[in-house]
Length: 583
Figure: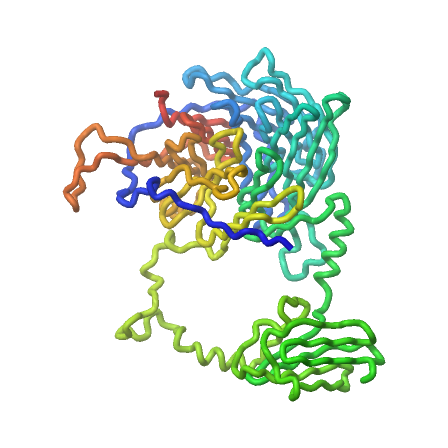
């Protein structure tokens, strides 16, 4: 069995600035323009049955404003009338009204369990669109941005089951066929999940294709499904369509053969509710294994063979459990008996007394370890000196425990540890895994539309931008930019909703749920001479922070950053903030 390679992200030291002094608040006003929308944005609020944190992440925090990365300063949203509206900015002082480029054929309000409509710009001439009811549209647009050749036309549309949102899509073109690969996200009910939230996250990989020589319609040629228990922070398909990268708190796995999903689901469920094959306990000297026997079992039906490092149990001619033991046992002293309650008890005497076994049979997950209450109490007593009700019970000790009151809230990382996984689509296996540890995921941005989206992670106090390169097996993730101290600064913004940065990394920005937008610029040379008070050295560069306050009380529904402008969408207005002037 192939094992996924454990990788790490390599930070480029020259891109870090250990002498960064912080952001200076600038009171320079930012030009802000406001457009009133003809119809309200098609916002879909969470229903009563969408109560989990995953529903909130996927749908409650959905970004309703979409940026066309193939055409700079062109943004889209979908309104209550089912219209896809576009605003393309040439000149800030001569803004036109958003124009309708496409209208969904179905009435959105007719579906009770619909999700928000979603859109993804697959290439410079293709768009994928979901109306939120479970129908997928593939649209040929012609060259967008050129009114003469732009015409949105449905090339494929099909009902794909439960409602979903589109996460990512790519277009693949060769001499024989054109195909579009799309990643869809659903949150599905899991009836037999008694312990968790009762839901699981499904990512569906759909490939739609058309053979050029046959000149037939586009049709679905492949459907595969990944399942996990948390909404991915980031999920993107590689440009060649051979792999998929996911950053998530809980891991995803492919459910083999997407078409037979129901069968797989039933198998998975039956596995989950199966009782453990055996139970085992241990003391410092021995282990006890308990196995429930079928009705009417006798001594003749049971064969137990002990070897110093191996155990083999056969019940009624069927091999029940066999494998290498975690450590050696004394085979002469080990015994077994049948108890009155129709159970088999096996006593194994440890050769290495005092050694705690983490598992009974190496690699076997079918048993359940039962802790002895007296043993737990003894362990707790042994560890008592490491814990205390007081913050610092003995200040005269050489190494006092950490005082949590000295930490600021933004110093405390999330307990959740995310991982970055790469999946190979032909084998449906994980090929690379990066444990992100405390490197909190912040946001993603498309720097080059022909490449995968970049993702930004917190590293210590900084925010580092990483560009995936699927073609480079040895160096798959490249550190391309740093936003100094931004990891620390953003942690104090408790009401932040959306986070973004310019594709040329000139600034990063975040917005709160209402009104306020914060802009953090990269350091720029000073026109006047400035000195550091403490060190007396001359400061050559300064990084500015700016705050914009929108003239509205409507919640912010969408947020996008381009090299020159920030676009902010509320229910009834679209705001444009001019951040950079053209060079």
